[in-house]
Amino acid sequence: MAPSAAAMEQDFGLRLVLTSASAVAAESVTFPIDMTKTRLQLQGEMGRTQGAKKGAVGMALHIAKDEGIAGLYRGLSPALLRHVFYTSIRIVSYEQIRNHVHTGDDKHNVSVTKKAFIGGASGIIGQLIASPADLVKVRMQSDGRLIKMGQAPRYTGLVDAFAKIVKTEGVGGLWRGVGPNVQRAFLVNMGELACYDAAKQLVIEKGFFGDNIGAHTCASVMSGLSATILSCPADVVKTRMMNQARHDPASASQNFFPLFIARPCLQSC
Image (cartoon, rainbow, N blue to C red; front, side):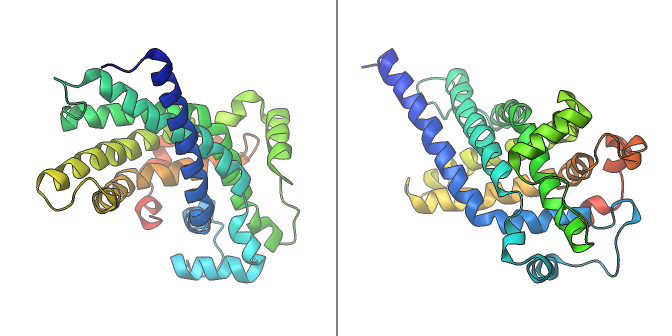
């Protein structure tokens, strides 16, 4: 018996809520890693690095020493806001599109190629909506460097950041770096959602795991690795572009393509 329209609508809403809650919980736990990643990506930006470049552990310890443990959580509020929209939209969109293009009665009967493009398209939709929160997150994460130099941070909080960016750069300024950002989202979700779906189906069919936490964990590890490898260069580009205010002289000479072919892209992954 096919589910009613009301039941499907309720299931859709529940998926959005649960996906958002899971994303917020995961981001809260892993945010110090994201902060470390952002600072690593900004090392050497326009020749501003002072001293030897740091690795991941060294950078995390450096932030904690200079800015306190709270410094590892700078920019958490826009990060959580971003994931409420980005993660819920991309995952639910992927499932909805996949379920409409499958062959036969099995909703998983979709080719890996189709899953990859469905995942990429879902990521673009989510990132287009969430890009302003991503931009604020990057800038707030970057501001710790200003504090270290005795300067005031550009923004005091989430609302202040949105207000100042709109005032000084216009509404379009909230979508600065959206080009490499959606390309990153396409690559992340092409590698993550499609790989997760295919990997989970593979380990279950081969009998390594049942449809349980073992299969989900194995598929998550494989999809996370593939997504990171595919998206890292674009992630470096979007971080550096987003950190540049529109009135920043450095931004006049920087665009997606020169940044994308720059050598530091893979060094910061």
